[in-house]
Image 1 (cartoon, rainbow, N blue to C red):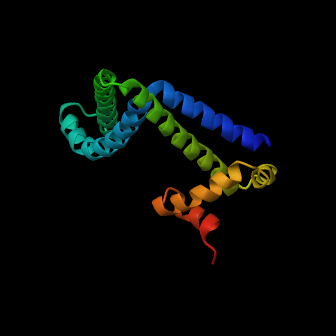
Image 2 (image 1 turned 45 degrees about the vertical axis):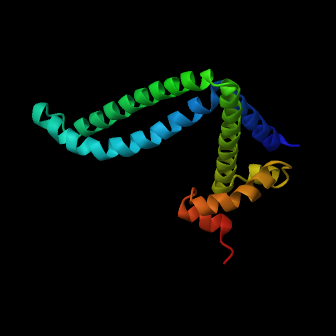
Image 3 (image 1 turned 180 degrees about the horizontal axis):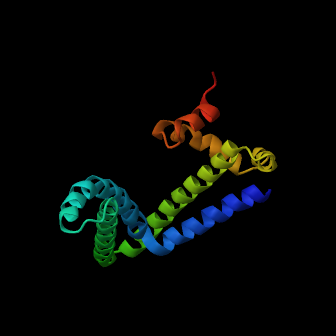
Length: 169
């Protein structure tokens, strides 16, 4: 076991614990809110920024201001939705435990994504001092091998990274 394995295990343990502590709703709802918030805010900021520009002329800053305000509002709404859903789930038998166990599973998946992303990034940068420990790692090498298919299918990695790691031509 080398320091890369210790890093991966620590990351997995921490994210799994955070997921168990917070529950699935507090893990997933903010992620969904951020995705919706970024999508919605980026589409609405320009037209509303033009309307705001007729009232107060702030130049290009008004579009960024509208984007930030909408994004923050959507994050607050997402937090309220998560709290509301959590209060309903707690009323169900074993609802709290189910929320925590599924939160731990979500935390584990997030930890796998973080570990895979960082290790793949280190391989992309090409730090010679870290490539050998990654190759000799008992944990990180299988994680990268098993998640490479998922990363290829979901196109998480940028095109030039995928070509470097996964193309055999």
